[in-house]
Length: 238
Image (cartoon, rainbow, N blue to C red; front, side, top):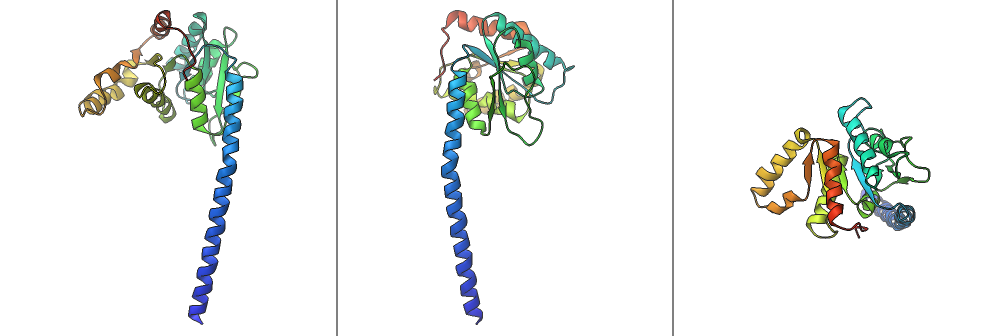
């Protein structure tokens, strides 16, 4: 009798696992269409905006923060040399970037659905507050439609976006574009690790350290973008 019960339990367990696995496969298959819809919507809207520079940084920095004010200043100066501004669409540095660009040039926000802290800021042009469920789709939009990255102090998300761009340029999956890290004190620990650990152990090449520029002022950040495009033509990245 015990053996019969164990047999039945095993059959029920196996049946449940098969059903759950089948449902997962079906769910994954349908997810493809959601991903496609985000790409299509993003491509159709972003393809009309013209040359832009993305500004990244922490969602947690407030209006009175030094880097919030600098991000807003950088964004306004970016529009003055003919570029629009793309941010992650939320608060903090993202808000500062859109705020500086708003009314002066294109101001675009690529928002991401998160359980905490992310919401659209009020400085995004009408029709250009795009919403994404998937980080990887959103990152494609940043890389494809940005002619430069301005990277302000931030956390894991900011580092993710920075490393995505550096990896794609290093591996020649996209053409080179200017990447500017703002705040030498903030970035010094990471840069020391690049040099003393990655480079020292031959995990990167010395020329990889030339893929970005570190600056401390708004004028320096914008000047680096301008100098690059005084020399090279503006193109969609891939």
